Image (cartoon, rainbow, N blue to C red; front, side, top):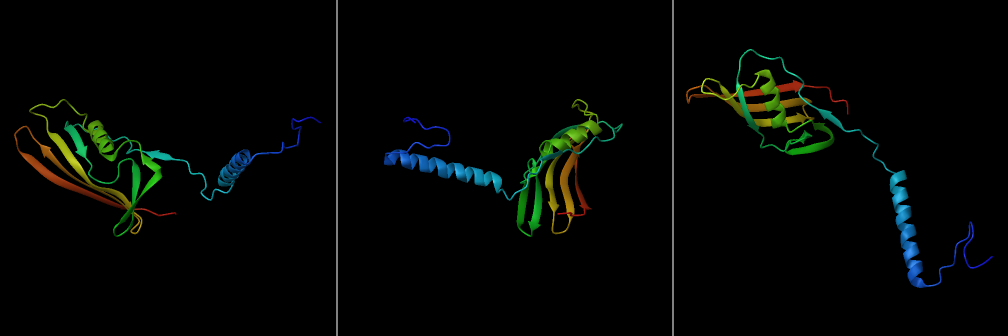
Length: 167
């Protein structure tokens, strides 16, 4: 046999620098393989949700943008304690909640062009989360409807729906 290593043989590493580099590569390779094989977190497929399709109303209302000053943007938000929330990176909204709600309402009210005779709806999401302590989905919004005159009427809407927590 010559100087080149054959099948199943390792060439002797003669200088310390190459020995350190080879040791480091071997250690990193072992760490990567171990991390892939001993992963304690099972694979979870991401799921995406929307609000569905509303029934179309005969009333025509121009829907403006909704504001959302809350923590929830696309990820589901769970209340797990009095002052603690967590985000779920595996369950997401198809769009931001404010855009989902505006789109849903635009479809429902056939979103006509804004004119002096068309009522205008605008609002803000107050709360949009799942309360795991109470097993409840909570949605709260404040909104106003402005008629052709400068008169605007304000409303609030709160929905609390119980669910079965299977986790």
